[in-house]
Length: 339
Image 1 (cartoon, rainbow, N blue to C red):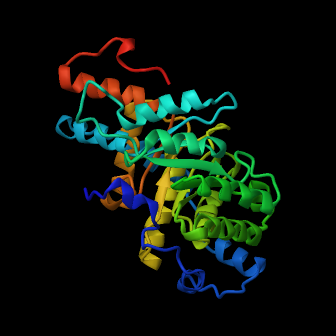
Image 2 (cartoon, rainbow, N blue to C red):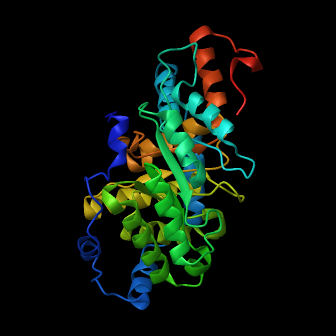
């Protein structure tokens, strides 16, 4: 596994947002294309064999990680987490507590890694920025009228700008699923492009994660099309879900998205990350995803720069499993803090 410093995650993988013209040219789309040409491209992608995707995901989920590799897998899982609180009842105090846990998940174990990021609503970004300081843990903010994505574009961009100006290193935007499902692909594309530009305004450089809300996309074919559409528009990451509807992240959906980023890299030379979010609650669940990442996309994605878990309760179970591996027994429920 290759590792990079946490601070490297503030910039796009190649140091700047991709040039839309070169990206579109690489897949045979000229700039100035319209909805019809974009639809032809997306609907020309190979269809997903749903039965095959389900079967392959189930097969990969049945594989086990050897005991000798489990310690690495648990620590890697922690390092890939976006520790998240996205509730209407969130307070500055709750965010500060979460940030303390993000910096030092297990105070009794100095070698326990910190998480990748803390994900909050944009009005709480200043609180998280102050609490995390120079720890290397990033601040991610949801934006663009999260979780519904139902707002005018100027409102969505103001939402993004507020978070970036407040110091967010990463923006988790939501696509307009109504537009996508209606076939208004150009509208979705242009909104992602505009949000990406807002992430890089004023000399700042925030990573852009594009939430597809796969539970509303109905089919694996739509998941594949939405993944490609987001990458065409310059996404740094594609993310499954807001965590606000069911189903959220699933192994078959994540498999389809991992295939998409793998094929995108082969076609364009640009690596894009994947973030499953919602419903991943146990270390056992997380390790299944790590196996899938390695087998489908490749070991280059086994790094927090390229794979994240969006989670709120997952960390506690991973810490308990980590402690059991070290001592041979489970600790009581008071071993970990409540989220």
